[in-house]
Length: 214
Image 1 (cartoon, one colour):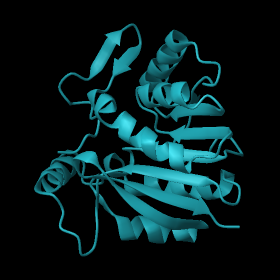
Image 2: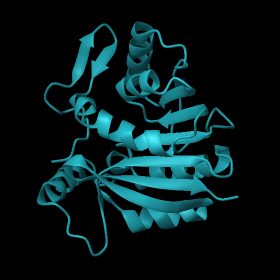
Image 3: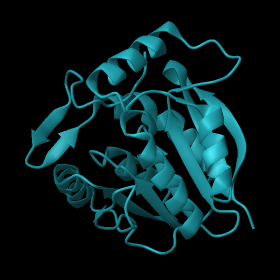
Image 4: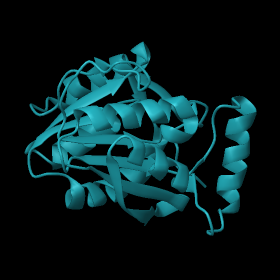
C-alpha cells in the first residue's frame, strides 16, 4: 500500500473552515521527519513544493524550530488550507504559503533546502522536470533536495500494491504514474543535482537524497 494522500482517499477533505486533512500525513510524517533530522541543514530556509494540505509543513516546523519553512502549492484550495493550519499552529518559523507551480517560473531565488513529498507520481513528468530545474536554480552548492514517495527501480521487484497503485493512477491520467528512480536521477544530474543515496521507507516508499553540485 502506498501512503499517498490522494484527494479520493476515504477520510480526506475539509475538517473545518479551509483546513483539509490528508490521512496519509499521520502515517508517514514521523518516518519522514526522522530522515529530515539527518539531512537538513541546522538552520536556513526550507521550501516545500506541493505542500498539499499543509500538515507536513506544520509538523516539521514544530519539531525543527531553527529552520524557516516556506510552504507552497499551485492550488488555491491547498493554499487556503495551508494558511488555516499555519494560523492555528501559530508557529513563528512558518511563512505564509506561496503559489508555486513546479513547471512555471518560481517566485523565489534562494532556498537552503527543498522538500517534495508525494508529487512526482501524481503529476506529469514535466512537473518533475520543472521541480528539478527549479531546485538546480535556487539551491546553493551542497543544498538538499529531498523527494519522498513510491518509485520503481531497475533490478528491484516492485511491490504488488505499488503496481496496482500505478495502474490506478495511469487510468485516471495517462501522464501520472510511478517513476523510475534511474530516470529521476538522470534528469536531476542534468540540472546539477547529484544523487547521494536512497532510504527505504514504510509502505513501499522511498526517500531520495540529492545535493546541489558546486
